Length: 428
Image 1 (spheres, rainbow, N blue to C red):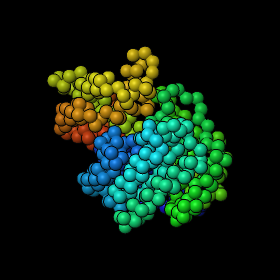
Image 2: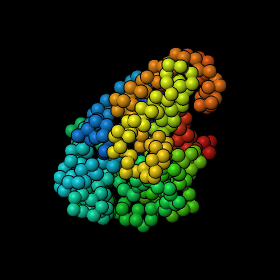
Image 3: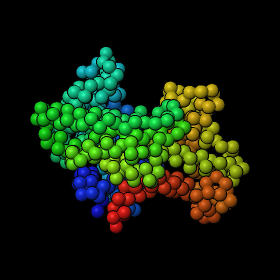
Image 4: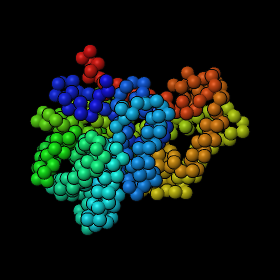
């Protein structure tokens, strides 16, 4: 039976901590990989969208919550993944996309977004009203954050009543790494101060109670804290259990909660297993999955360039370079240095801001050209050894490029899956 979100805190209470991977991506091949993995393993498939990515106005993907839900539902049907395994979540749901407006106007938009998410069937809701709006400080105090989170929770509760479906499960807390990773080389990232985490929980509990939403607070699954993990453009800060020991202990006094860890990308099985053991039961991953997607696509671009005389010299990579240079808004504030350094980061940064471009028509056309060129070809084993040696089992048979990309993404998901079950396997 699949592990459910509601099982996470009881598992920890019973000294058998388990975890769930949260896939934070809107790319269809990443979602196919997640759904195929769930189909084959029977594990919960938790898929989350962010406030900037998907909202009632369309977000940067152009999708509203119903559009995102319908896309996932259709991909699940195609992949034969049971609907019962799928949980949709909304991340950082609050006024962030509209923080240039006054607080009242921004919160009105946030409320409309929350309502749209819940009406569309999203049932894991991260309430995040931590950011200042026009005329306010950049970061708000805990009382204001909690008050606004309660306002949004009330909207979610009313929307759930309209649908007649299950009530939402909530995540609170806002101390997270920068979305998509940091922009500079990192030396260390301190974990959240335990007393700050305790205060966040206490203030939210009181604010929910004052609003008569005790039942909603009882469905708060966890709190977002910084465990001391992060990645920048060039490097990764791995989890240090000793540094987070005091933070982990606060869950002893909050038996109904777990931690949610953001930016767990690139950690590897051992650090991920340690995170779960220490109470970080929800592991969010996004840029690593699309970094691997890009890695696989570029390897196939090289293979096609070497194999097929009429294909050209890395046309996919050149198309992406032209696209990113023509529309620099998604990377120019994040990639510094000389032109050569910026070019390297555009394609190979761990923050993977190239992920914002795959849905553009030029990128989709270049990927389609690549896939059409290779589909049905027999790839020589030495060529795979040269450009993607781990995929040599795809050699010498009629080739399906989508299958290779999905396999490669699933290799990452298998590492998360192994970490999420590691404590159970240790006991067994």
